[in-house]
Length: 525
Image (cartoon, rainbow, N blue to C red; front, side, top):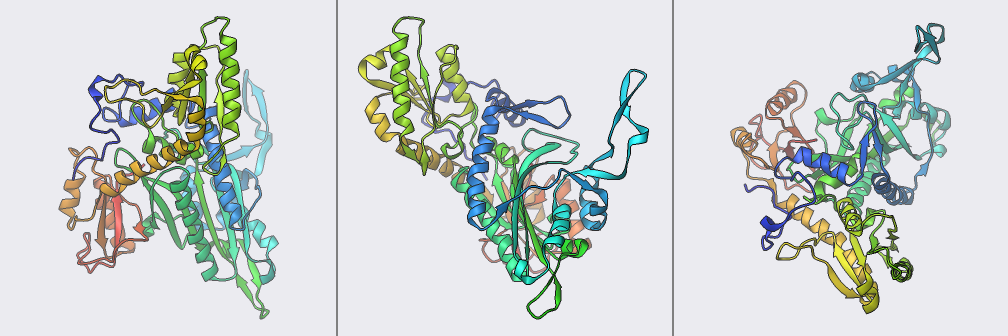
């Protein structure tokens, strides 16, 4: 199995290029990831362990994700709402399996006032809460309590709601965007009259996530069901979309859960059916978070920084005027303003083109490389000669270098670029997806048939092993636990059972029993 397919065309003289970042993906992928976040002005440490300040470019990407995904969620009939950040501890105590799954990650509020003592602020012993409040790790319990008030009859169903919020899970090992103590997300929660309706909802939202990841983030994923040991606490079944990063690791980019009556039983979500009998509602939940931005970085970034798909780029085209503190600068600025106005009238990828004129008092070269490191899809430079000739100098972020290793800046007549801008943006979006799709498809092995071969595939000497799709017998209980422990020794986890996998053949790689399905195995974030 070869190393993960590189995004670099072989024809270019890469040894001649001095890249914008001080660390490369091949040299130190983990440090490269942190460097991209820093150099692209995505986020920074906040002073609170595990929490981050999301800077405007990073948050702008999140806003684009939020807007595009919110439209898709609403198109399926869901409505947005909001629930409190604080959840009574008693709500969690009603559902033992759920609270056990999150107990070690819960942040708890126990006092409502501070007092000064010996020059320091401390919790007031007289202000202890009668009941501790959990800072929202997820909202099944509090939303379930609300649904128990809302649902009385079959006529009240289905309940289809979603909220955009922040959650807190006290992680021990954190990494920006991928795993933080506080993160942003959306969480959908629904209640249905029948099992079939709830299961249909679960798969419908999984497909919403799959198509969103691929169409908007240009991030190919594998959609499928999680094994028993990877289910959401309290769920009957959990489904996920899994994306492959450039280091070969998997990232769980979104999940959808069929909860059955687990939470409706604990929260007493009952309804009277059309025959007058009382039943428990069937519920679901599903969500994606800011870890999608971490996935975007690791799928599309290169040794010069981030590359943002045009669909989610806050600014798709950035105009950088080449100013020299000369009288002719005014003409250059006027030229750029009228150019920006022309671009704003265009439509690309279903929306008005987002074009920014950067007039900050910074050297043009510094601004150019700043935007290239941020991953703006197209950077346009305009100097005095361009103005005189009616031209613009175009740099496409996905085609940064020429064959000789120099920056690929194409001089184009202004009118030609305006005519082609939408097609160029669409080409960049499609090109990023196809590069990532090829990487995913070419780095899933399906010829691993025994555990020794699996161990060899993921040996420490193999830097980019990719994933393995193997046959297994779907063991449960203690037998599954034993398999999971064997995988842990190799730092591997089960990802999901691909919905489009071919039928299983032969015996289970782990138990030797007849195989019933195929499952993905990988190292993961």
